[in-house]
Image (cartoon, rainbow, N blue to C red; front, side, top):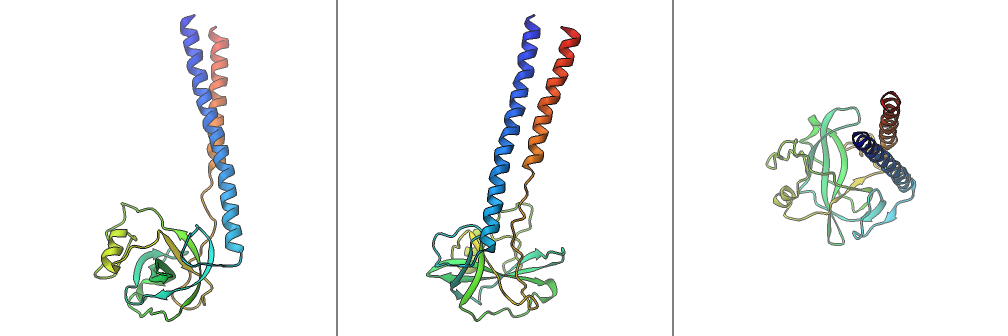
Length: 217
């Protein structure tokens, strides 16, 4: 009798765990849906004036800034078709605050072309810099061949610390390089699948338990 009770407690413990995990994924699903909707609304809205303070992820902005054409960064990147090339990034200073302006993508063979920019008014989308990837090679600062925007390398190359938000330039002629990056709300959202998996495990264990109990008790 004691073993049967222990087995029952053991089974129900895991059922509760799996149901809790499934419920948590439903909470995460609703959060992700609201996040995607918020991003889409921001990307479809008119640009707001940005003066360098309180940057927010995926805000569409317009601003005045001072461009640094001396310390241009060429960051290895693939375009939407998977072709290798580089993103062109300029330091831009907005009210004495330091940002990087991602002007877009160029093919690999155009790396050594001149990409000086003589403008002061811009439109862009703020996006938080992605986490550092340990599997990417080290940056080759001398040859301006970057794989990541590591803070210590930026300080070594430019001599300044930069905001963790990158500004992606928009509304530029698509036929001229660099070509603007496509910023959208295509964020991975597999929480419904995960919740169904956890709920299915809970139901399966419960049915197996009922079958075992009917056969042995």
